Image (tube, rainbow, N blue to C red; front, side, top):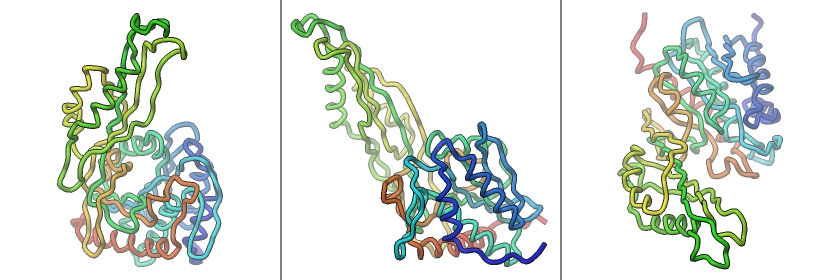
Length: 342
């Protein structure tokens, strides 16, 4: 194979950003990246997920990777292309997470050039809506010891992430003509009573992750302005710091007014770290809970979650370039902890 020229991580990030891959439209960017990686001599397995959506499992050599760098190739809408302004790279996916994918590939290039073959990558689809790619990948692990997941952490290693527990509060009433409200029973008023009571409940706390918080994210109720509402519901999104059943127990008083239905649960996660990096706790969730078969997890990436999912999404170029070196350092440190398999 002819010698390959060096590539620029910013150019690769821009190429990825400029392909619209808002969930579930990842097919084109996955195919493009698979071809690009094969062109540079990597072994690339396309793992079907759904339709033309697929994960990429990347290895450097013939042996299975012991350290896997991973992130997602889908993005939230709306799509907007890349642009450079000074030290900033803008575009959908700049920090969440196509810039991260480019930095991880840059780290693989460094490690491969140094003769390291025990590293690889896993690029998944669907992280932003349902984690379909992670679920598919977890059914067929490749024997890795560590998984380094990429999300925007300002180039800090994650100590832990909060989980998600989303519930639907449903209230039932009795319809009546609004001129005679005493003949009916307002489901909306019951729901409001429950939501007000929720404010005074002491939610579970953890010394590392802090206290559980929540957002009342969606409300629905009633049938017409002149009818006492017979039904109402709210979806409440909790950012949990421990088992969901601990939270469910303290929510029991709300059943005076509403029923509680489970909608989504993602557990909190505690991660491994390596020396030499700043660490932090993060309130968001990742694919890590759904990739537990891929080894002990770590979390690291350039960019800030505060600009992810916004119309101003960007990453600092010097942070993006630095992340390439950081990923290589993390992988090397982890390889030094992996027992010799020979």
